[in-house]
Figure 1 (tube, rainbow, N blue to C red):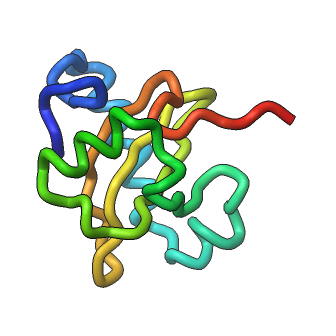
Figure 2: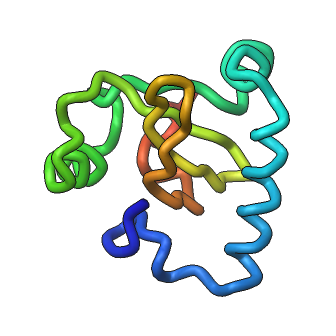
Length: 107
């Protein structure tokens, strides 16, 4: 879990952290099938090659640039939590309140 940088958790206030923790606790009640298949429009894996350049640089800086994809969990609106799914465990990585790690392409 990165504390600094453009997607770091260190900028969050206590109330927001508690809100996010509550939403992540709701994900814990679901299977990966429910999260990534049934709710694939909200939550999905993203190829690292599709991430913004800053996100790819951050992965290299934290020695995680050997992975192929990371997972985006949509909390609300543009807010996302990004992490690495490893052996069925979600390792929280980034807080992305403005959907900048992998901006949506226009239709």
